[in-house]
Amino acid sequence: MKLATFRRKNGEVSVGILSGEMVADLSPHLDELGGSLRSIIAAGALDKVASVDVESLQSYPLDQVELLPVIPDPGKILCIGINYATHVKETGRDMPVHPMVFTRFADSQVGHNQPIVRPFVSHKLDFEGELAVVVGKTARHVKRENALEYVAGYSCYNDGSVRDYQKHTIQFVPGKNFPQTGGFGPSLVTKDEIPDPQALHLVTRLNGEVMQETDTSDMIFDVGALIEYCSTFTELAPGDVIVSGTTGGVGAFREPPVWMKPGDVVEIEISGIGILRNTIIDEER
Image (cartoon, rainbow, N blue to C red; front, top):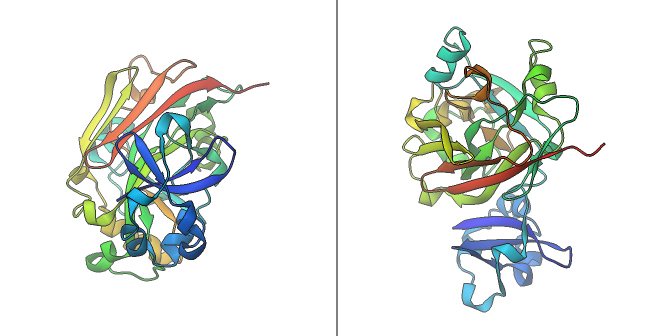
């Protein structure tokens, strides 16, 4: 299944099943399922969603609804830095011994086709195409070999980075948390459709030009290793998100640097998952 969080024209937020350019509204079942996608996951109700008769649901064209971040309200967003060998090389860093982890806040995210906002204090807004992993059940001290059992599904992520603020200190958090700078979508693809998250192909395009391209097999720490590590220092909860890192080709290390600017269109495409598309706008002052 492909599941999305969306807002109808009347302003109400719902959860739906995506199929092509349509979304089937699960509103009639949300009370029994949990009310939100995060709650559905926490209740272990994805199988119940799969059994719903989609033909009985009201469906909307995607251009008549607003897709929100897949999980608008995650308890934790844990992002992994420097997790592809090509990115390590272009940054000039040493190969990491442990995952580099930083956090994002929920209000730093936007959904598919929602605008990413370039803050007025900086023009150094960069793209980072990444695979997002959504946690499916409570995970603590999970072993790598069992880690994929704790996954609900996967999505595309653009870990938009305000590079000058990121580099103010050795801590990444300021540059990663300006409001509405990261894209998350278009949907949650349940793990039954992605048997091996290390067998995916990821492409980032800026205005149609390929900027990043890689296979997820090139991760230094694979998804299982990331879940093992993160579940050791914190308890992962259903709906938490692990953003697994980006490959080489980011704008900051190009000559000359390439920054996202108002009017640009950035796309993150991952095989088996879909395309996350966002336009760039300036922050209002």
